Picture 1 (cartoon, rainbow, N blue to C red):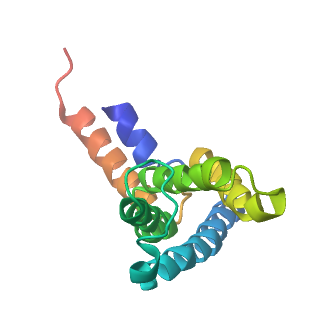
Picture 2 (cartoon, helix red, strand yellow):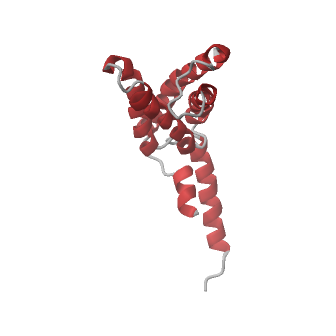
Picture 3 (cartoon, rainbow, N blue to C red):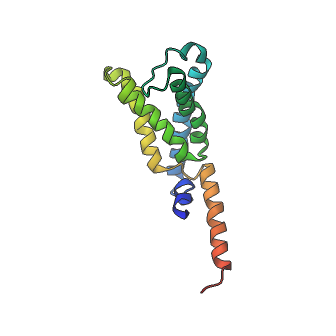
Length: 155
């Protein structure tokens, strides 16, 4: 369980310029991705019957999943809140867009999905950085865990 918490809420810090870069990438790519979700959400009525259905679950359900990945998860991504859990649906969405929905299209058509997919995979491994909600939670859990170890009697 401790390993899962460390993965979800990292609290080790690199230099500030690295953390500022991670913050800038989260904000830039998160806002751009959020705009795609907002466009889908605002045109839901028009898209629900014609949206690609690569998973064979209905156009409407595929659209809802795409909106979840692009709109809802973008907020967690930008804030760095449950960052790694938020980024997984974003990666899945772009994986399906690149390899399935636009798989036979020329690269120029698939290029944006490839850029997002690549950036999200890199950021999945890099983590949210120091300027994130997860970092704050990780520090709190780390201090709490450290205090409980100091209080517990040694066997």
